[in-house]
Image (cartoon, rainbow, N blue to C red; front, side, top):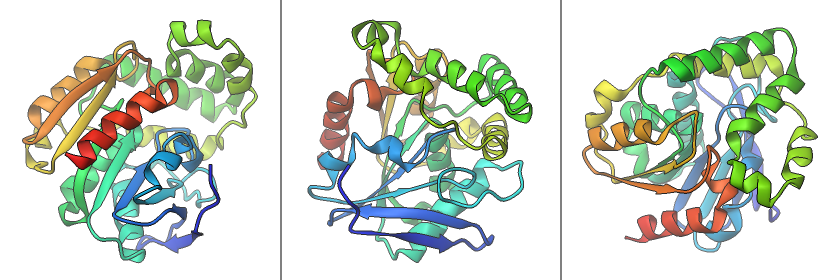
Length: 265
């Protein structure tokens, strides 16, 4: 990933320090990471979009270089963090791109602060409470409270990547399991936010042009969850790619092409 043209921290209205970096120049795109991911998770998107956009990356509260206030968190709080960052950086209405929990944050950001956003890209995310997802998040929260960071990484690996991708790139397993685990207190606090997220009954209020992307083999945020969200939104289109949960890691070029076509359309 290229060196940022600007980096620093802002303090939100709630008093939380949020770390950010900016790449490139042009109309702003803000990328919002998922549970357990810091801003580096978007490394595969920066070179493509920083050519003609101001790409803003940041660490959600509880991870990376941002502060970790006491939890549990809510998606609404994290959406307000994104709003405060956009205001502090004096961004014109942005193209907001959110993955998984980041997609949930973007939904609430659009509902709570619609004037901040020009277009939305919501990838591998959800808008409704789901029994399977709830059980898995509860499992992660229990592991986090016990400090079982390695077991969390092992669990994350098994839904982040599809079997076909790991067969083609078996070195991914070792590389992924050797990455530093997220801080457990921040992870558990953010997982609680995921557990409480539900916007499906308000999705029709989101009127921004939107692209909703799913991974066809995603067992966490299954394609039907993305389809339900896209169907409820007033101005959304649905697309899918043959990946597991981390669409933009498995097929970065194809994901970038989808997003660029939407952004420029």
